[in-house]
Image (cartoon, rainbow, N blue to C red; front, side, top):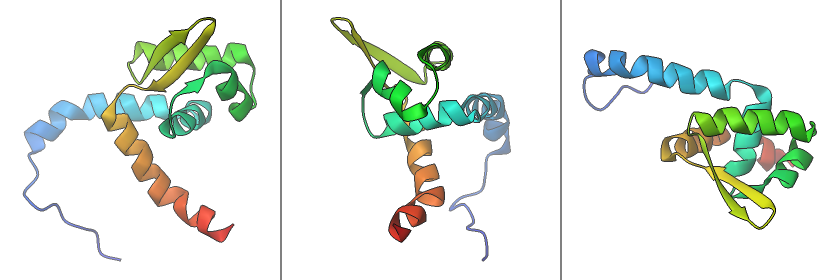
Amino acid sequence: MPRARPSKPMNMEGMAAKAAEVAGLLGTMASPVRLLILCSLAEGERPVHELVANSGITQGAVSQHLAKMRNLKLVSTRRDGQTIYYSIASKEVQQLLDSLYCIFCKETEKQK
């Protein structure tokens, strides 16, 4: 299958300036646990206990991953009483997760 070409010439200077930022984002998302958490959040805001249940790992581990993603501004929080809710904080991350879902997961759901 031929690759799609960009509709206009690429600005290599602009791409070089963004390369480190994008590589850092992809590196953070490269963890299977963080990617699973982000995929869960791509469907909407979730409380921590639900992220723990969905990921199958301990609350401490989930909290460490969430803290890292919060520090990098990938996720944001909202507190309601004792419950902390997490959501995707970046439209770019949401778009990237949507694209990954279309590429890797959509066909899997059709087969079910």
